[in-house]
Image 1 (spheres, rainbow, N blue to C red):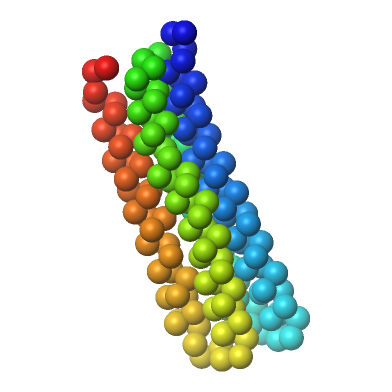
Image 2: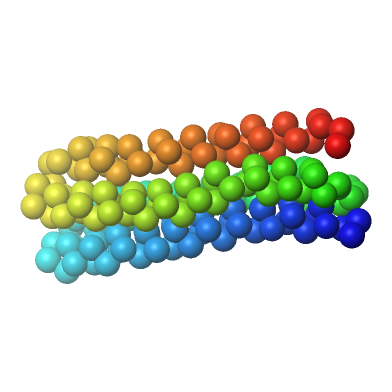
Length: 160
């Protein structure tokens, strides 16, 4: 059972990338469907709706970043990949904020982006407000990213 720590840590890294990535894929897809409807009616609005469609994709990037940081910390991307079970569990726990908030916030951000796309379809001059509505959800993804980064980097210095 010496390798159990690495299994827990890898599970955390995988969950961060997978769950945030799934949320982003769902979110970008939802916003893309709404954007396609708007572009069907007015192709000149492509640039505006594309920006709104891309916003829910950031959570997937954040999840990937957490996975890379974790893999670097545990020695998978270079060094020795030998960590205790306790440390492995800590890494798993440290990845969970990004995993869960990434999944949830990407989908919620997509809903705000879809509403923004609908607003832009009727009132193109309101693009800035549409972006702010969707970007407000991003705040929580950034907070989850921050807590995961701080937790992961803090674990490295522990001697357990």
